[in-house]
Amino acid sequence: MAPPDNDVLWARSLRCALAGSDVLTGVSVGVREGEILALVGPRGSGKTTLMRCLSGQLVPEQGEIWFNSTPVHTMNHSRRERLRRDRFAWIDPEPGLVPELTGWENAALPLLLRGVSHRAARTAATEWLERLDVGAAARKRPSTLPHPQRQRIAIARALVTTPSVLFADEPTATLHRADGAQVLRTLAAAARSHGITVLLATHDPEVAAVADRTVALLDGRRVGSVPPATGAEGVTACSLSV
Ligand SMILES: Nc1ncnc2c1ncn2[C@@H]1O[C@H](COP(=O)(O)OP(=O)(O)OP(=O)(O)O)[C@@H](O)[C@H]1O
Image 1 (tube, protein in one colour):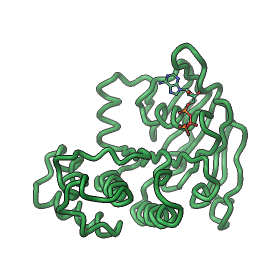
Image 2 (cartoon, helix red, strand yellow):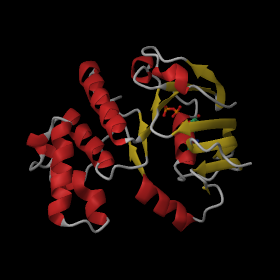
Image 3 (cartoon, rainbow, N blue to C red):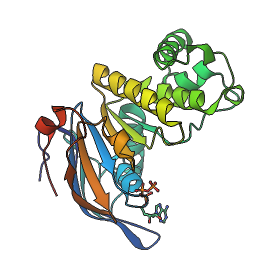
Image 4 (spheres, protein in one colour):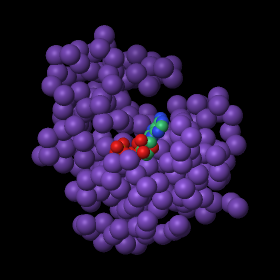
């Protein structure tokens, strides 16, 4: 079956097992271009595993995954790697910066690895750092910076390539509430202004409220969509697919 035209990512009937146990069972989901979709559910419900499948890090035992009109589930390892490198970005709860590099060098890393010139990569990275309120961290090593600033650098690194899809796994879970809320607002605004589709895994309803639409997981199964806590935008974006 071909995916709907307006879904940038589309998965049908995914089953994924890890260490011999089913972690996802019969999960279907579609993500529309430019939307922010929250994947919600308690710890261990399968949010990260679903994002790892959708981003091509894990191959499901059963089911289909499509990125635009390209099947991901049948791609070989190197094509999936290229897809992740060229079109996707990922944010973890922990920043995972390279300690030997400065703030801007960390943020620019995906561009430098693509062969973008030093000057252009530095300019782009610095712009994102400033947008995320950590312009002053551009020339500092991560070890000299507080954790919230390191996480902002990691977010700048994810946005610097303007990916088609950004997978954000509890991106503000290690930040204080007010700081996390501000980072999240900036992330959402940046995604919307650049047309970046975002999958946002969270167990926190306040974080999920930034999304257009919510998909809930429980024990590796989809248990239905929950309307967003604020705004009417998500109601019109609501679709799909259990
Ligand atoms: N590499 C792995 N090997 C074996 N089991 C795993 C592995 N990764 C995750 N699991 C298990 O799969 C289930 C789903 O985990 P997953 O991390 O996808 O959930 P989650 O909703 O993202 O939770 P959290 O918010 O804690 O990250 C859990 O029971 C977890 O223990």
